[in-house]
Amino acid sequence: MWPLYAAGFTTAFGAHGIAANLGADSADAVTSLLVLGGLLALYDGAEVLLKPLFGTIADRIGARPVLLGGLVAFAVASALYALADSPGWLWAARLGQGAAASAFSPAASALVARMNPAAKRGRAFGSYGFYKSVGYTLGPLLGGALVWAGGLRLLFTVLAVLGAAVAVWALIAVPVVPPLPRARQTVLDLARRLTDPVFLVPTAALAGATAALSVGVGFLPVSGAVAGLGAVATGAAVSVLAACAAVVQPRAGRALDAGRLTVRGGLSAGLLLAAAGLGCAMLPGLAGVLLGAALIGVGTGLITPLGFAALAASTPPERLGQTMGAAELGRELGDAGGPLLVAGVAAAATLTYGYGVLAVLLACGPVVAVALLRRRG
Image (cartoon, rainbow, N blue to C red; front, side, top):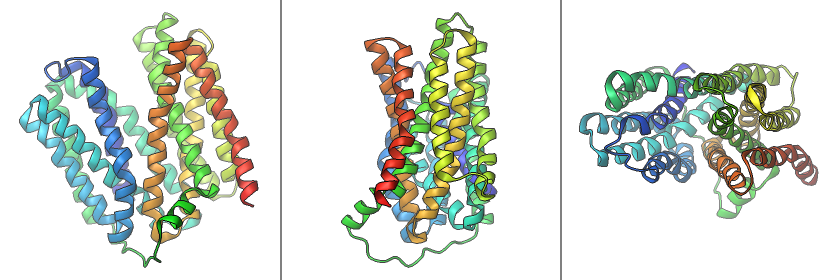
């Protein structure tokens, strides 16, 4: 399992480590905010388009080859800019990293599910989410230190070495998990499975959690600055959010496996906690920022392992890659949609109203989920 945790860390560290430092040390390539936005969107755009495709390929040929190929491609894409150091190669490297992460991220999730019995999947996904959260937390910090020490090329060099090392580790340690025989699936069969409440409810909860997380990371520092807080205080608030999410995930997974927590109860509680965190973010001052960060972190930490464990439990083993890829697509849409929604409302009114709108949507989630599951029943 450790190479799979390392793969989760790699995609998170690569995404946030570069994103947080692109504007600071690449003036020759990032000539405007529009260019910066395009570079940031390349990574997520590739993931939105390619994760379902690579998830389906993992079901067809096996998740392990897709995992290894994705990690090698990530290392190669990172090495492109480290060696070339030109604006054009920066675009190519960022696109290649996103495409590579689209391959090894759903493959790693599918392997977590295949390599663990149903009674231990909560703990496994909790640990996997923990190390991804560590990557998200350390990415801006370590990335900033590397950029300070040797520029953006040093950061890309470290990512190339990291991707190659994890690929070798996975080649040695991850066992061969052969693809399972699959019954013929029509487009209608796929549509029915992806619109079934047992898929929609966990995926929508994961999307909501990711939306709250992205809004917290992106906009809580803005609220702190408006309240007169310094960069250290607002940075500490974002660290609180990431730390709470990282600490809660393994505990939530163990509670699910032990029967102390149900999927429906945990997802509902997570959405309500995240909504409460956004409500606290509406309060002025340091207290509102810290409370908001802590509650959003706890809420997302509850939802992430439970959502993936529920998806793994309700999916035929031979279709795990496809399901994980589609669920990751839902998360990416939440990652982009949450900040866009809050920013749009804030532009029309204020940031406080933006937090409030997203909080209401998340709070309505448990009601909608219960209605869907009852209708299916």
